[in-house]
Length: 444
Image (cartoon, rainbow, N blue to C red; front, side, top):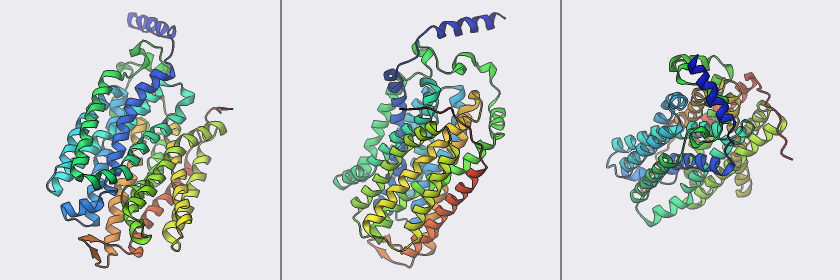
């Protein structure tokens, strides 16, 4: 009884305080988003230094795809633990620890002398930056009003894409000017500095900064109120939307990151006679389109009060774009670039999975549910990057240039067909999801 009275007094005290303003909220959230930016940089970097990596470690396409995917192996494995820990420990500790391990992993990868150490470095990086996305969504749910949350995943993606863009042309120019090991190694110290800033500035909830919380969960829920992690996970998986959205965004992100994060630059360089820098610029522009579209899809679904059918329409557009690019006749430059940018824009719809999940489960389970969903998101590139490389090796005709394998259009099409297959599956599965019918938000 005494404990309940104290909880009620504390709740009343917090209600009398002001909620945090945009400046402090974006500062707290933005530091976490910077770490997510670094994680996305590492995710995409191998696409720009494919030749350097293949030469340094004397590997083929399948091995390169596997090296790149080591990031995703640990990233995916960490998603459910991250969701559980975000609910129980809070984002601040997770983000700080993640930045520390990511810095160490980056140094291991940058200065590895053989493939085993390089893969270990990628494994450490992926597992550590895995905490970023779920943690910043958790910060977003606590530091911003509930009716603004649908835009938060898109803003997070915007930061991530900024990291991907920095791993495009800017990284290529730095690698051309310096050794790739020096450039990658230098990013380790930036990662460590971001981790230190997070520990000093970030707090898990507004109440820890003296503000009133937006979410009642942050005030009323204590450790005693929550079930164990296994029970929580079982409860989360009982919701149909959760396990369907485990598979759906994987097809979208799998296509996008397999192309922009690994095989797009070799494809454009080999079959459209582009320079590496020019091809990197196009894949970076695709990521920018993805970043711009993420918040727009969130705002559009808020305005219409509908998420499922907005998402489904975007997936149909994606199938058309990728199908023409990969399976149609070779295109002229402008139609090709236009379709690639449209594919980037439609891919921004994947951010809708997160407000759908938030609206599908109780708030006490939201971190765990988000971890499950993001695990599915990253399963796409984790599986497709090496799978596409494996398929390309099966169609390789023995052509080599300066120690690097050259793949025919037939080989690329065979690999990319795997991507389209998953995307078609995603488009079918979304028909079986439940519309959450969010409250309409009028922006004008």
